[in-house]
Image (tube, rainbow, N blue to C red; front, side, top):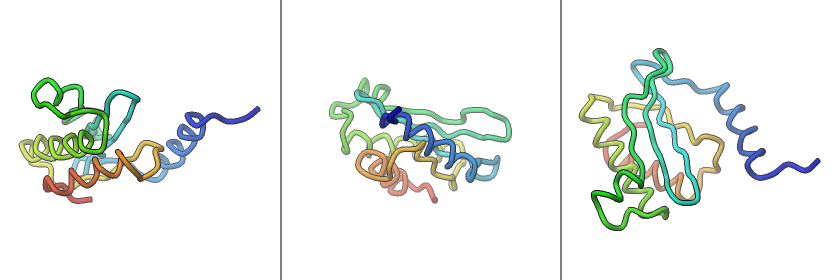
Length: 119
């Protein structure tokens, strides 16, 4: 049986999650992308709580140009960094969620770094 792209991503996700975990001092920045939107959230794995979340879906209502492309993904990164700054979160662990560090995932990371998050 051949493995689909999504199955391969899920296997990579499991491998990655074995190695990284967020803590209260350094929560995990998780990125998910669909065909229509890019989502990002900061999760404290110690408590299992989502501290901050945003997406192109949420930003698109407030700003024009927040589409599911690199520019929209960069806006998501900057917005998650701004929201994290409001909650005094400076350092995070980046979880690419099994996706290759390329394109929209890299744009979210670059936007978050520009916004002031360290990882």
